[in-house]
Image 1: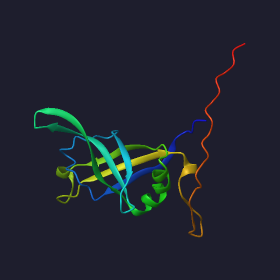
Image 2: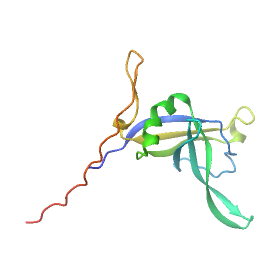
Image 3: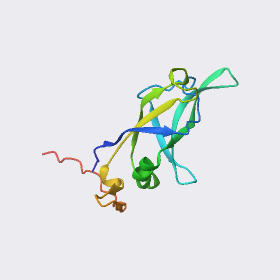
Image 4: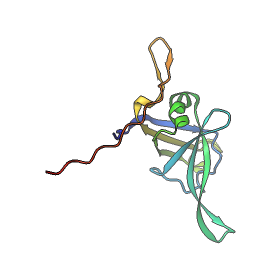
Length: 144
C-alpha cells in the first residue's frame, strides 16, 4: 500500500548555514535531503552547482545547515528509520538582501506520513511511533 504524503513541517528554518546562499544557486522549490548527523542533529543537504578544476560543471551534494531542536525531535524517528520524506526549499534570503551582514536564511518544508513522526500530548509527553511492518505490495487487478 502506498502512503500519501502530508505536510509535517510547513516551514522550518535551517540553522548554522554553511554555504553562501547567493553563490549556491539554490532556488525555491529545489529538492533537499535530511541526514542524521553523528551528534544526533538532523542536517539538511542539497545538490549544489559546482565545477571540477574550475572548468567542468557538476552537481555536488553539500550540507546546507541543521534543523532546529523542535523540528529535529519531530522528524528524527522517521529519518533514523529511512522513511520516505519529501523535503523542499520554500524560503531563501541571500546575504545581500539580509538586514544584518551574514544573516542569510533558508527555510524548508517536510512532507511525509504523519504516522511515522513523534507527537506531543497536551500534558507535554512525547510519543515516538513504533516501527511499522512492511506492507505487501498491491496485487494487480484481475482481468475478466
